[in-house]
Structure formats: structure tokens, C-alpha cells
Length: 234
Ligand SMILES: [Zn+2]
Image 1 (cartoon, rainbow, N blue to C red):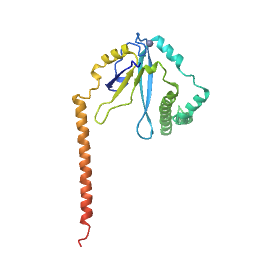
Image 2: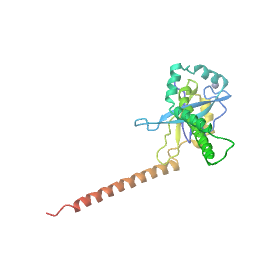
Image 3: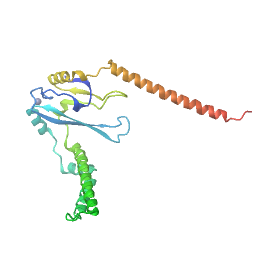
Image 4: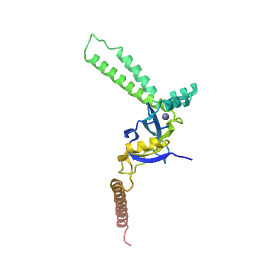
């Protein structure tokens, strides 16, 4: 029998309050683990990109140890595959090489306009390299941070909000004690389909839809009217 609890909360997962309890067993938490999920940007179309959502979830010492034991060991082939998937790695290395090459031409004892340009270029390439490295480390993390039975005790959905609504996610929580504490910590974030703001968002969506439909109708009538005015009388 599945005893997990489900709830829907408004706001990004990382912005929520977490009780000092282990999400897996409900005992006192000692550490936090990064729980990360990736969702297609367009869930119903061809997935061209992913939105990464990560949150630090509390766990107890025993569950953290169990999570580390359950982590799959990556083979050399998997590491190589990860390396080739980190598309930001190549520009990071190229920018670092450019920073070194330009930096070697700087003469510290002579400070004229040319030297100033070289210093500015070195800083630019170094910063570009750092930004690309940051992006590459995120791409590589997809391969190294894997869900385990422990971290799957805290599951969250993609953003379920519709037009003019605040971001919201549904949560599936394995441990009932943690779920109750988590729910009371975020009591003000519970999504209510009958609340005034939800109804206001729905009315605004309907209004925008009606305006678009009327504009389309008006455009069609004008186009048809113009085509009729060009028809020569018999
Ligand atoms: Zn635990």
C-alpha cells in the first residue's frame, strides 16, 4: 500500500521552509542533500531544453550514508560521455587559453594604451572562461547527481501554474511525519483552487482569450470586407 502524502504548494521548491526532520525516515535531520530534477521546457512538444530545479532537503545521518551507498558508480565510459555532453567545456578551455596567450604579452613596467587594452582583454577572456566553466559544471552535474531510493522520498513536479498564476509544484512525500511537519511549515503556501487570487487569474486568462478572439474576428471581418470591396459590380 502506498502511504505517501501529496500536496500542492505555491512558490519555487527552494523557497519553501523545511522542518529539521529526515524526509526519508522522519528522525532528526543532521544534513541536507541536493535533490535535483530536470523537466522539459515544453512538456507536450519536442523537448528542446530542460529546466533544472534543485532543492536542499534535510536527511538524517543514517539516510545520508544509505544514499551514498546507493549512488551508482559511474564507469569510465559514462565519464567520457558526460565530458562530451558538457558543451560549455570547449569555450571554457578556449577562453582560458586566450586569457593566458594575451596575458603573456602584458609588460607590467610599461603602461600605455596598448597595455591597457591587453589587460582588459585578459580580464574579459578570464571572466568568460569562468562563466563557461560554471555552465559546464552544471551540465556535468546531471551525470553525477543521481536520484536514489533515499532522495526519492521527496518528489516534486514541474511548475504547474497557468497564465497569470504564481509558480506552484505538487509534492509526493514518503514519510508521513515529515509530510505533516512540512505542510505546517508552509501552511500559508498551500494552493487553493477556490482562493480569490486563483479565481482572479482564471478570469484574467478568460479575458485575454476573449480579447484575442475578438481581435481575430475583427481582423477577419476587415479582410473579408476589403476583398468584397474589390469585386467589380456585374
Ligand atoms: Zn533518515
